[in-house]
Length: 257
Image 1 (cartoon, helix red, strand yellow):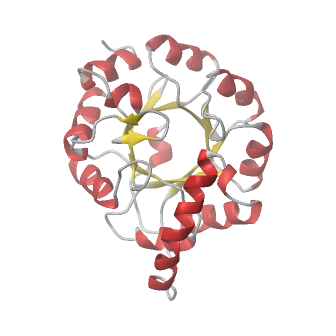
Image 2: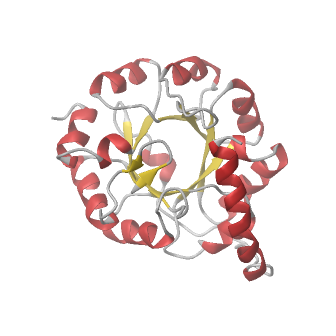
């Protein structure tokens, strides 16, 4: 069983309780106004989605005692365009309270990064302090599920960052109507990382669809390579969470040091 399969299996267990709790939930008839995640990706030569996460399956503990509000303020002050918050508890030591704390601390759009596999998870955060965008992983969802969850997120006023790793997943993401594609340079089956994944897939993304490169981005040279490839934004977590000076690292990556 791959790491992604283990995470999804655990998430299915967690979702059972949510399905009962939100069995009668009706999504909003009119999408509420939230912070514009897609607009945030148009800032400068390259937008930075700065991520808050305490641990990861690949690296283990990163910053277990770190506060999401404090870190998010630092990200915003240093020039980040959006915040990503891990809310999975079992594998990333996250919680929904981290997302709320980050959103209260800044004016930036906040992305909920989790394994979203069921409508009850969207119901769980369909409130004024919920996320401005959610992550949907193509590799964890069937074709119909991906489109259904993306459309449901839109009804909740949330943009969808649809994550892919190969050509087949990209094709399914585009068929689902995705307006923001996240290309994960980390293979969630083997956890091998290569920026070449973004460089290979970027030419297959049509104009008008935003492209975010995720994972394996550690230095300004990586960012410049992705700018040259026509990528709109980078999502960076580990390099920031482990930096001695977070704000300086953000500025270095954006070329503002």
